[in-house]
Image (cartoon, helix red, strand yellow):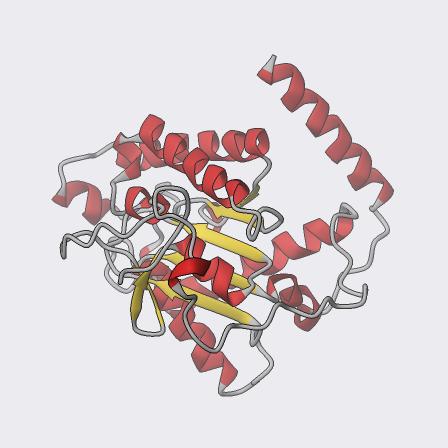
Length: 281
């Protein structure tokens, strides 16, 4: 049944591509507005992108200036998917204005219209593929359960490649193959649950199918500016694809984003922790 659905979806995509063959290439400044009112959630790899974006804003203050980044070093997909803060002092979580918080809470209080998630490197997801896909489903479950985040567009990014040095260090010579399988399964899962999938892995690879060391700051997993610019290119191309398919129109009047509250919600305003996201008291 899944194969039939996938085949049907690809027929629709090809039909849209054919009709959009003459669509114009949008200016980069327009393409990046696809990420306006969006929030990126990730680990230290996403943090590197946030730093790069901050650097580029020194030259162009409008560059992704309506996009926020929430990144915590070493956080796993499992930890990121949780609807509550463990409070054990060991587990990782996101941070909002100096307070430990879940991605669901941050999405709610910031009024983000889109969330972009890149997690899995620290699980490590290549040896936990089935579990990883369950955590992806859990993220969508909690996003859709709360009426305040029900209409938020959710996008998952493919997990970036690892270098051969990483594989040798951990005695997992075939780990990149495992990651490739996870990313392929993640794309299928996104199609199944109604999430977007943004492929960023392939352009970052070298001829050996591992992370191109010319793009890496440690020859293992982290990216230096050239690699981060390649990532930005993937984001730009994804936005162009959405425009070509008629799924996004940057020229439509912009909706006014929900203003951030000036203070934390009171006790009566916060839903039960067991039902949705919260913050650490």
